Length: 114
Image 1: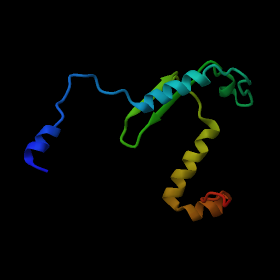
Image 2 (image 1 turned 180 degrees about the vertical axis):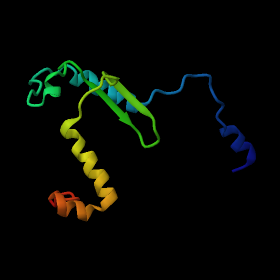
Image 3 (image 1 turned 30 degrees about the vertical axis):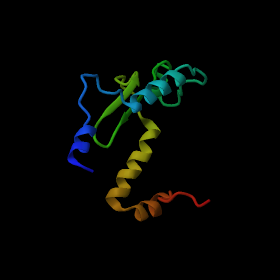
Image 4 (image 1 turned 120 degrees about the horizontal axis):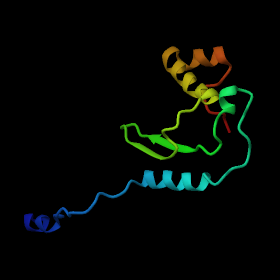
């Protein structure tokens, strides 16, 4: 291809706002759909859970490069309870090794075979 042809292919920058992230659009849509759900009850077997407002709902995703996408009540503090277990297991697995954690916990570090 000649240099003249390459020059013809050059795209000039435009003074437009950057494109909105498709991740944020998905998070917003997900939040909008799920926020309508009000079935069930707040768990009361742990006192802190019983004090939670059932209307609180937020979605937050942080990418590997540190970008934050959020919708809803993402600044509301809450107790994590059992959802902390996979994070603790992941940390222990990385620190002590997946096989050792599997033996000690009884959880498999592998996906079930199909």
